Length: 202
Ligand SMILES: [Zn+2]
Image (cartoon, rainbow, N blue to C red; front, side):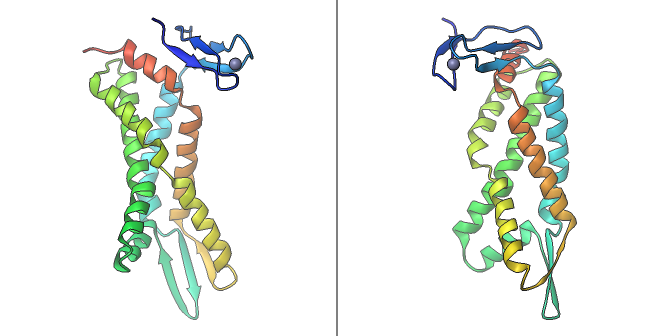
């Protein structure tokens, strides 16, 4: 039996067929693009994932903002913010923020990089399938965008009270966020599953 996919626009169930490179499958009822076989998509996503991993460490450890108020200056990093929550006994909040803004996005990037390296080497195993499933499961827990929104809100609130300077960590964090969004938008999950199956060695 063919594997089916549902059209996101009109809910029509359509059997999934192998596509030649560069072709798109459209819904026969409404014309919506169901899936496509994009050339060099895996290599592009692998490059973006590696860039995101490189940006991750400076994004969480370098100062996002430097604040100067009443003669005192303070440098805030993602890790320092979480540490402050721990020291104020806000364990659950600190754990949730650690998971959603550090652990889940980082593990997601590592899993996807592992899967894409397996595909580019044309040798995939069962653990690559598990890694890609894990990547999809963690997708809902990765909330870098929410953290960025929190930074923007605090910046607006603090602008009138203190002198703010943007740190190198903020530039890395924005770069990381853009890379993560780019992967989410351009990753062709259907193509990844097909290639995993195509290059499976055991
Ligand atoms: Zn449709």
